[in-house]
Image 1: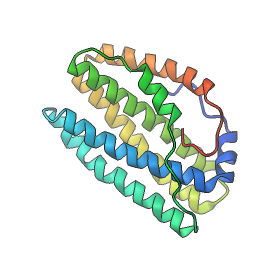
Image 2: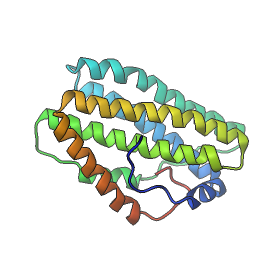
Image 3: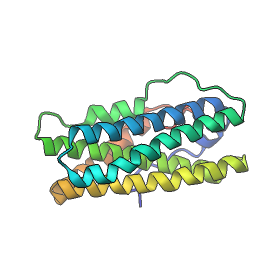
Length: 193
């Protein structure tokens, strides 16, 4: 369903489990950044009524996810660490086409958001299946379901506002480029991406 062409190395779950405070910290900041991305989309494209209507509830949902991760940290006696640079997202942003129309800029932003949500969904699925803590399995299952819905929303919005064939072609370019990104990033258990 997600279309990702390179699955996460299964060893990632073991590394994440050994770095629980770090992975939860990174997860919290991913949720915070997802919130601000949604707000930015609404601010940048207020005339896109369907986008505003569909993305607005996601702002609240992503922020509630941030709070859920903070609660999980507290429950475990762990502290929210400092935010770190997201090399995965930065590499996706470097692949973004610039200099086009507002519609092209919107397509790029929506496809990047869809890809981030797809990769997050895939990682949450791995955690929900393979982490040894049963409470975290359930915790991450809920996030997996949510991210799948966000991925679908962003893809559908891109196709709604752009030429479907051009959007599908660009999506495949992102998926192909993501392979290169994933192969060049070191396998780290302290990062969600």
